[in-house]
Amino acid sequence: FKQKTAYEISLGLVGSEMCIRDSFDYDWSSRVYGGYSSHRPLIAIVGLGDIRPEYHGTGIRGFDLSRKIHKNWRGYPIDWSFRLGYIRHDENGFQNNHNQYNVFFLAHYNTKYKSIPMRWFIGEGISWSERVPYVEGRETRRLSNERDSQLMNYLNIGFDFRVGDLVGNKSFNNLRLGLADSHRSGIYKKVKWFNYTQGGSNFITLFLEYDF
Image 1 (cartoon, rainbow, N blue to C red):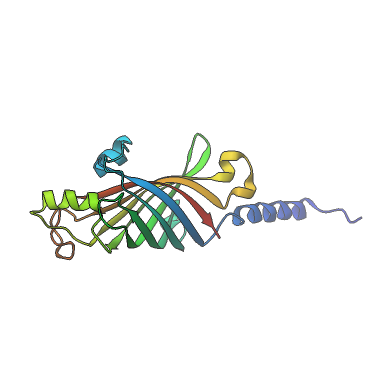
Image 2: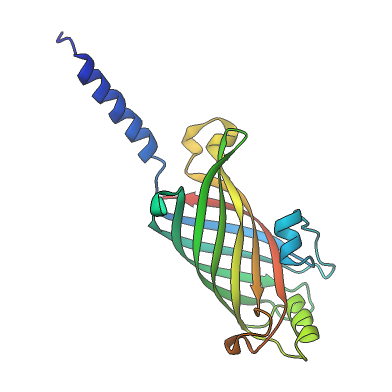
């Protein structure tokens, strides 16, 4: 047998390492999720982790499709993606159930928690709902002289882990488990498109995301 040189061996090791890393580097992803309405403000949810449910018992389930558009932005461990989202509102009998559509950009910050890789993320865009969500309408009309809006600003904030890292099996590393806040708001009566509304809604969601 031909004996390999140290240089050839090192090239093989580098190549193997690249294959392992690239095997978990995907451009597309799809997310399925479900959750409940929270009466807590966005600052309490993000800053304090206060995710108590709102008492009317309304909820959502949804699906997002994502395309990565930039990796390691400006040398930082930040990836940008463009997302389209569909949400079905369960209004628990207070009004008819309805659909919501979201378009937004999402930034993922790649880091670690106790040596386990994870991602924090924040997304910004717009959201249009066939009906104003029940709990959202109650708040915006109270704060905005009885005004509400089907079109609102949209935020998506949360974190996720690769399932493979959590269970110790890398074959599941294209599947992610996470928690997110799906948030609609009128930006403090500043935007005509949002009917000069204040207030909004927060839905705390548990999700699975599949990278492909």
